[in-house]
Image (cartoon, rainbow, N blue to C red; front, top):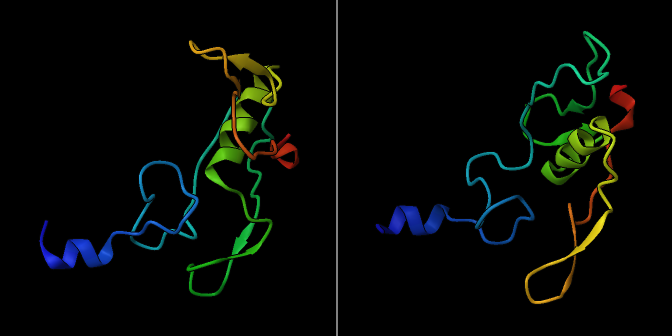
Length: 100
């Protein structure tokens, strides 16, 4: 890995995956449709530069919880992994019910 790639690698974000996004990781858009989502609904708002959330920020985990919610599955459902440890379907999340 060259020095530029090492310099750009972020490890301090709570985004999904190892290190998450390293280019404008705080704010991006997502399209979701069906499953009871109101057509044409816009949720949240970025700052004037599109760099940071300004209103109603949503984490990727919240998006996953929203999909489970639309499917009628409680995202806080607990299950046990192969070692018997309790786990949740989604960590630290809340469904974005304002889309429905």
